[in-house]
Every structure is written in structure tokens, then in C-alpha cells.
Image (tube, rainbow, N blue to C red):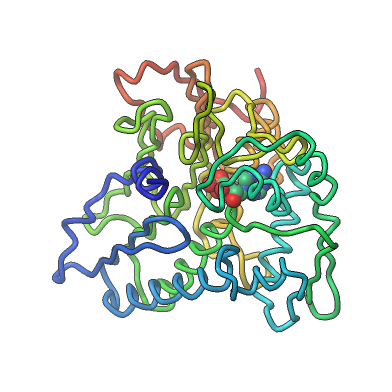
Length: 353
Ligand code: AMP
Ligand code: MG
């Protein structure tokens, strides 16, 4: 049920997946990292590129999952540490800590025990007792992740990590690398709410990426026209349960242990796919994923302030609980409003008026 919900509610791609036959490329749809994924490649060595992407995503899932007992992350969480040879995971964790610092701790992979307490890892949802949250919260915080020689990692007792808020973004960075190595110039990849578009559509026009309407799973808040870009959406509507008429979603405020209530119903972060990397590994896909989760926690004011600071290269579409869609000016010519959606649209400028 949760999977169906996640599949149905993820940021939608308006494209031509089904039109992608053997003649104009290759495509695949599969399930990995707890979500539905699709890859459509239109040129280059398409068939080979699609199968390399799929194999790499399966293998990344095996390494990063915290519900698979034999994964590198499960071993780390069980207290076994992570050897220095796992440099790519170590770089990903390093990037996660940077994004945690950049967002005042709103993004924090050490929320793992809190995510478990709410039952989001098992589908056995429950509202944890305050005493349990009080017991877990002292173990949350990046300072509990310890780096040793050559990038080896250990965790303080009681601390565990959950890469669910960043792993699909990292996976999309890997896709960019693989498609580039296979000479592909036109492709789109959808990993749940994480979209990567490479080049333009085969007809030369931009890819159209729908920003789902958080209050209407069949509708859009708008549509983005993008080339060589990542677009990642986080929203409380993507995974949640209801109890006594109240909705509890999967994006937690690390400060309180409770689902974030910031006045935003979704955050879409868009950044150029230009090969920019964090070390040899994580790039803008990873950044978009971390920031979409974090900015959902931070709310409109702090999200816009981080964008205005210019410290990171990204643009935003924010959907608010009170019925507004805010689009930063770097997307103004790429964003199409949705007629009849009922939203009030605003452009956010870099320099406050
Ligand atoms: P996303 O769909 O990318 O917004 O990520 C949501 C997932 O990230 C959740 O299902 C949790 O596994 C994890 N998560 C929840 N809250 C946070 C947070 N504040 N920081 C980092 N990861 C989180
Ligand atoms: Mg995320």
C-alpha cells in the first residue's frame, strides 16, 4: 500500500516514456530503494546504458539500505563501523553532514531512530510516546558521526543513520555519470520524487517535469521545462499515516522528533546537471535531495534565505499550506502555472524589494 501510494504520489514526469521504443532508444522500469524508478535513454549505446544504470541502482540499494541486514549502512548502524575502503559512501555521508550544517541541522541523517519510532521503516505506523522521543533525541546530531583514518566511520552508541533523504539524489548523480560515460545526450531518469533530465528531448525541446499538486494527486501545481537538470520534490503527501483525524508524515524535524510543520506542503529543488561533484562522488542530484527534505523542515522564510544567500547553486518551487506557489526568479521562464489549480503564484526575486 505504502509503495503504491509512493508511486502514485511522486513528482510526475510528463514525457514520452511509453513512446520510447527500440528504434529511438531503450527504457526500463523497476523497483529499487523503496520506490518506482524509470530510465529512458534516446541515443548513444542506449540498451547498454539502461542496463548499467539499473544494475548500479540495484547494487547501491544493497549497500545503502538500512532495512537490509547485510548492507554497509546496517553494519555501521549495528556498531561495526565502516571501513575506509567504502570511500564513496564515506563521501556521501560527508556531503550529508555539510548539508546538515548548511541547514542548521534541518537535514540530519541521524534521525534514523526517530524514523523507526514512527514506524516509517516498517509500515507499522505509530505515534511514539514523548518519553521515547526524549530518550532518542540526544543521539540525533551529526557530531555523533566520527571519522577515522582515510574516511573510516564509526557512530556513537545509540546513534544510527538513515540515508532515505539523500540516497536517491546520490543515485541520480551516478546516473549522470553512467549516461555520460555511455555517450548518451538525451535521457530522463525518475527515481521516485527525484528527476534527472539529460540534454533535451529527441525533438530538441525541453523535458517537461510536473510539480505535483500536494492536495490533489491527479493534478499539478505547475510544470517545469528543463534541460540538463535535477528536480527533486519532498512533500508530506508522499508518505504518511492518519490517526484521530490528524496526518503524520515522514519528514521529521530533528529538533523535536515530530513531523515537520513549517507551513509548506511541498518543496522542489532544481539545479543544473553540469558534472559538478563533491569530491569524486556526490553532486547536484545529492544536493537537491538533501535540500528538498531540509527546506521542507525549515519553512518558507528560511528556505528563501538560504536560496538568497547564493551559497549553493539551486532554484526553488515552494507550495504553501495557505495556497501559494512560490517560484524563484531563476526558474521564471521555465515554470508554467497550472490553470484552475486554485493557487496564487508569486515570483521570488534575489533582491528583496
Ligand atoms: P525525502 O523523501 O527525500 O524528503 O526524504 C524523506 C526520508 O528521509 C524519510 O522517509 C526518512 O527516511 C528521512 N528523513 C526524515 N526526516 C529527515 C530529516 N529531517 N533529515 C534527513 N532525513 C530525513
Ligand atoms: Mg530528500
